[in-house]
Image 1 (cartoon, rainbow, N blue to C red):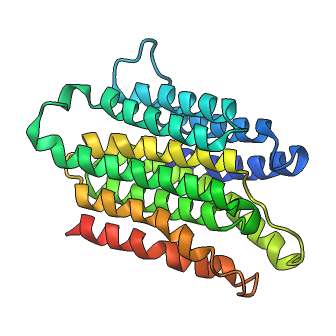
Image 2 (image 1 turned 90 degrees about the vertical axis):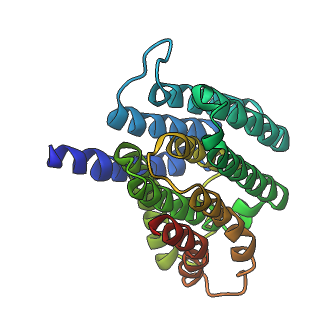
Length: 276
């Protein structure tokens, strides 16, 4: 049982990250098929841990696959009109929040959780809008992937502290998936610092980011002991990309490490609040 957990939570996602990097090299960063494969790999990781969904979905765990599938579809459909896609995904996440928490909408005690998750959606969408407007993935390819890595690690720990182990594993697995991709790119950067480092396209980043937020919606709604303030604070990790993007004059090999340290500050703060 333990070996299976390690395999599905760590080793397979690590291999998926290598697969995605290989696909990116072969097809190209901006290829829509690369973005589609990234989304499908995330769904595969989720199904591997949580099981295949029923049709129609009967639980929040099943609904997640359909929400992520909708995000993949709309992001690819509006890939040429990224800000429109951001708006559509914002509405899709809000609709997903209502769909997931339908039975708890009129529970007053759930209001802090709904507010925290709404803040999380706003911050995630705002970061995606900023990224598209500034062409951040092309200026510094490490900023947003490292930000998402910190988000998933933080979400996994907050979920664990909230006594929601299943989704802690799912978020941890996605962290391993993103982390292995970043690790390969970082090794390439060390060996060839003069080579442009565009890790993900804006479309791929949008799919991964909104998929992570979808998992966090479930954590926020159903984790027995989750701290809503910690979830809202975790969303501040997205803002770190604004500051990290100003490190353009720093040595290329050192920059990813500094980006990680900056992004880890709000993540660590949110974990500290969750642990209180």
